[in-house]
View 1 (cartoon, rainbow, N blue to C red):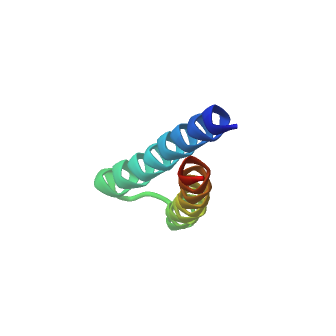
View 2: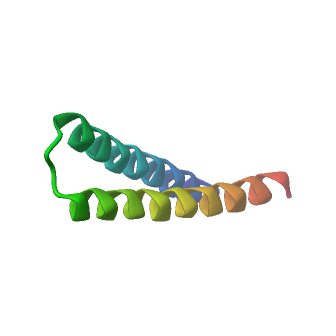
Length: 64
């Protein structure tokens, strides 16, 4: 279970990082669709929350 949660945390972190970079590159490029930018930032917040929840679960399992 600990290995599975570790892999999930890593995948969620990489997903968050990917969405963050996609949003930043869209802003740097300029002239993009504001709806796409909002959707990317919404996904970033969702993935970041999921990552934090998984990380807390992993830390609570490692502590026990």
